[in-house]
Length: 336
Image 1 (cartoon, rainbow, N blue to C red):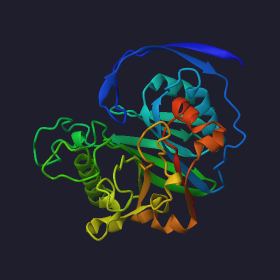
Image 2: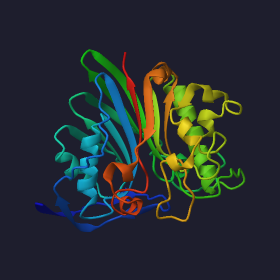
Image 3: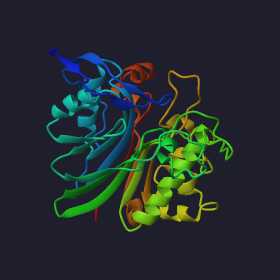
């Protein structure tokens, strides 16, 4: 197998937040790039007049300096989806180099967090991006108005709103896709008296997003996706996701629909996060939520978790250590 060696100098500080920390990263790395792999079990998601969108927390990419890049590149090209949204990009240069080798794809990076958008250049047009609440405080300032320190509620990872146009043949659709990565950990219980509580911050983040979309994007095609880190009960009452799905408590939840709600309902061996190398129980942390203008596509949609051990033929431990401990979640729907 031909090997290429790239000496990559990270010349500025990349803000990177893993699931259990919020810190900056500076490093000089020797990244070893090997030729793409052929995974015979990989599923081709692409269909005519259908849009395919994948969200994936890719775990400190590239966590393995030799194999993460070629493994991920091969899977992305074999899955052949139109749009990928990533969380936890540790080394942006590795991602840039990887996508540069993928002839069909282009990328857009977040200026504020470890997010990336990768999309097919021939049928997706990138129009603009908006890093929501990027100018608010990222510190716990004790202010009871969480609008004033919204970035703190989002764990210093302001949501990346991508405005895109997808087109194929004579079909087209404009989309606002919001990439998120909420604070990890905690006990899953909302504590109004503790503004630093992990679950409380996740709940406030969802309230902020709910309010933003209802008041600014009510007539637009909006998709919210990413790692919600909804620790605790895996159901619609979980504080991290309840503002979007618990219509008994939140009237504005009627504007949203969680496409992967059947996955959330179990069984847990189908969840996106299996805890392969962790002592924690499986949880479905990764979600895709749409707004009302997209409801008409629900009946013709497909939603699922991509089983990465099955797709690669690797053990779950090997997948976790070289690719990611999260499995991608995808949605596809036909455009009329």
